[in-house]
Amino acid sequence: MRLYLINPSNPLVSIVNIKESRWNRYRVWKPLSLMVLAGLTPPEWEISIIDENIGVPDYTIMPRPDLVGITAFTSQANRAYVAAALFRSLGVPVIMGGIHATMCLDEVAEHVDSVVTGEAEGVWAKVLRDAQLGTLKPRYDGGLAEIGDVSAARHDLLARGYAFGAIQTTRGCPLNCTFCSVTAFNGAHYRQRPIANVVREFQQVREKYVLVVDDNLVGTRPEHISRAKELFRALAEANLRKEWVAQATINFADDEELLTLAAKAGCRGIFIGFESPSPEGLHEIGKKFNLLKGRDFRASVRRIQRHKILVVGSFIIGLDVDEPGIGVRIAQAGARYGVDNLNVLFLTPLPGTRLWDRMKAENRIACDTFPEDWKYYTLTFPVARYKHLSVEGVIEEMTSCDRKFYSIPRILVRVLRSAWQRRRPLISLVGNLSYRSNIRVGARAYADFTRKRRNKHDSTAWSG
Ligand code: B12
Ligand code: SF4
Image 1 (tube, rainbow, N blue to C red):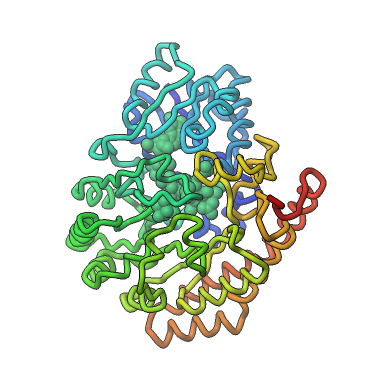
Image 2 (spheres, rainbow, N blue to C red):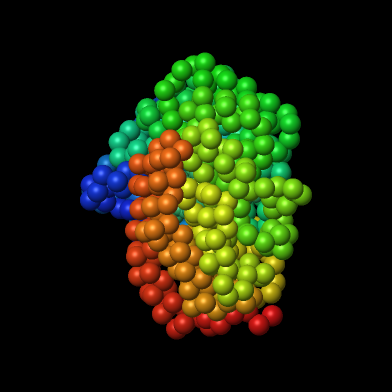
């Protein structure tokens, strides 16, 4: 039995041709969902994972599969439907799962034979059995997996074209920020995989560099932090010689022992969601953690950096509290906090989030010709109606933020600072130049987007 597992591309974000530049290898990330699914698949299936981000193959000249499984974030849904239509026209049954299938079940059901919602661990074996018997049902729900049942991903598949491997050590997040899908999808209960399983799986990752995909690597409570320390100790003892990057909340900085152990275990970079430079903004999105009284972001960032861990700060533009000038304020906040890189995204109502419900009720979802418009749900296009900013205005804020933070003098200051602090200045330089080069690409994409949005929808601010 031949199974194709497909990660669809989105031409607006995919770097389709890896061969064009060797640096592109550092900008595509492995679709871990499909590697996990492959790990759950019994040996009688011959599996190919096709990541369209590396290249879209001509499926018509490939051997005909018996079954196709497609994953998709919302931004990949359009392309997922095109691929699904192609295989269905060849008489091959198509199953779709993942975050978009879970949040937009009815839409997805129109395009595929079977939809799997939730996490796959508890249900995939049954789906495959039904497919073999020709009794595939239109819907399956995996719910939330028993975390001990999460088996190792197939790291032997997708062996080429990527600089980073990928692994997951926890699922779920109790914080439930309004714009984020994680609590709705993976639950509020923070589930941690058994440490021995994680260490064993880490050993199977082939790449030296690894993305730990957890949404919040160290969790929020003292027992989560203790487990994270235990994990880092075990990884250091296993002496894997891996270097990894991860995501965490700012409380990562609060425990010196945690930071020492993380660095020993191979942590080299951390993405932290600061989200808004103002307390009002943080209230609006429900990011309680960042509101803790007495929190000094600059000191927190510096504490992390002392362990030679790079800090990438993430912010959102387009909150109801954001007024003209927010772009520069975010760039200034990033500089004040001392982050090595800044990653700024447009406030985007993703289906299934609390933000989606609110904006929908207020008629503020501007790009709403679905499924076509899903391709803009990459957080790099302003798809909503913002309170104090028109579409052109919010793009202008994004551009001024990037131009300020990634100006050549500011990049030089950051690189020299990391050289002075003996913190990998070369990586800092490459990271900063890579973000800077995105500004040009972004400008072209915005021009096209604004023209289309003006023609199709209004581009003014929300008048509420
Ligand atoms: C790693 C990651 C990335 C990597 C992607 C690597 C990759 N290609 O998969 C990178 C950094 C590239 C990335 C990019 C983006 N991401 Co992202 N990302 C994640 C993250 C943190 C982890 C995903 C992961 O690997 N999980 C581990 C695997 C094992 O879990 P899983 O994917 O959920 O898969 C399980 C089930 O869903 C199911 N399943 C999945 N697919 C299928 C398919 C079938 C057939 C079946 C049966 C089951 C099934 O089974 C799996 C095992 O249980 C998630 C958050 C999260 N917790 O999901 C956000 C998340 C998926 N990302 C999100 C977003 C918005 C984006 C971006 C659009 C914007 C951005 N800048 O972040 C871009 C889009 C890129 C694009 N191509 O369009 C949102 C998606 C929301 C949505 N509705 O689409 C999430 C949920 C985060 C959030 N804050 O809400 N992301
Ligand atoms: S943004 Fe981060 S902290 Fe907030 S709910 Fe999502 S994963 Fe949790």
